[in-house]
Length: 432
Image (cartoon, rainbow, N blue to C red; front, side):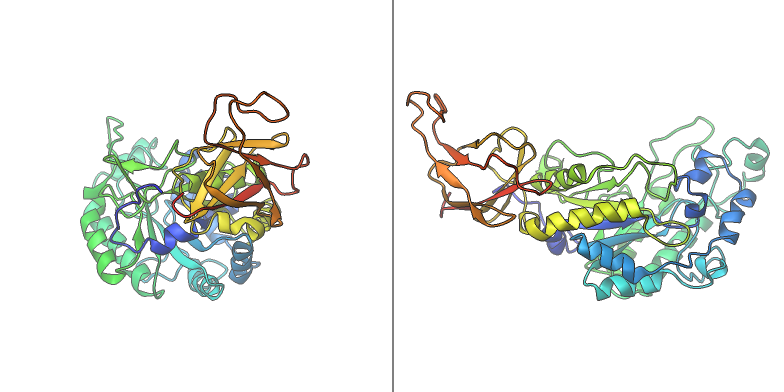
């Protein structure tokens, strides 16, 4: 088995077991329905953006239905946007009027969410933006929606990041103290490396990251902290790509999680129809676990508070696969064995799982496993898969691996099982 990551300050034991979580981006940008960065992309002023606040009425919002959908998909934890970059808050913060309780829906949307997901047995975390394009003390920079308005920029010269930092820390304290035990605190994001000439990006000094970290550890000692404060964290969070292997820092493997969308957007984007097929999503989950990581899969609910049908359909199909193959994901990690082409291995102790991304004709050859497997079966129905160990010097007949020693050959049915990704469960012999 691979060398495991060193323990972190947050409790990641459950995290590396559960492997699969739900990300939710939701706020008043759902009314615009053009991506959660719509205010930035379209250079929208506070005055013009106000219409989304004034008309935000998610009357179909049912967090218990969301929680049921997540649980049925096989997800074990959830992270929701308490506040995104536009500054809108889903909870009844005492530090701002820019919150759900002041929209037409007129109520806190975060507390019933937390209760619903906890009741379904899922761990709960908050995504909280370090940026805030609505706050009057957040300085205008090259990412701010008013970056091209010279009159606005001139009038904003006196903005004080220290005053905004106090607000950021105050809201973080609310999140850490008003919702019971939290499992994940997911801050987003630092960009001090950016320089537009007339302004620079913001990072750990602007956020007061060290103090944020200290407060988080004091108020929620076991909470998992992500890596976007520019001071490290408990987990690494590659976004919208699959790493080539187990993520490392200073040559050592770390706990990590791939953040992925169902289509091309995090927030609700009505016209983005670039939906990933279920087989791709399942393969991405398998690929993450095969490299020692998790996958956090995002949905962007609508302005009325529903998860759109295309998303629900894919989550249900993932759930159907997970019902049969969950033990090839939960509690699993990377394997020291090298899988054949178009395959992935995940492993949990003496059980090695062969995930077949491409269905071969009759045989699959597993190098290094001859004499090491006691039994093999298809995981979807527990039907035996017969095994062959062939003399590499024998004459070529129906099965032959010339010049290859230590190869275990599996005899598969010609017809692929009716699952999106078939899995063979291999029971390793002691000491294998």
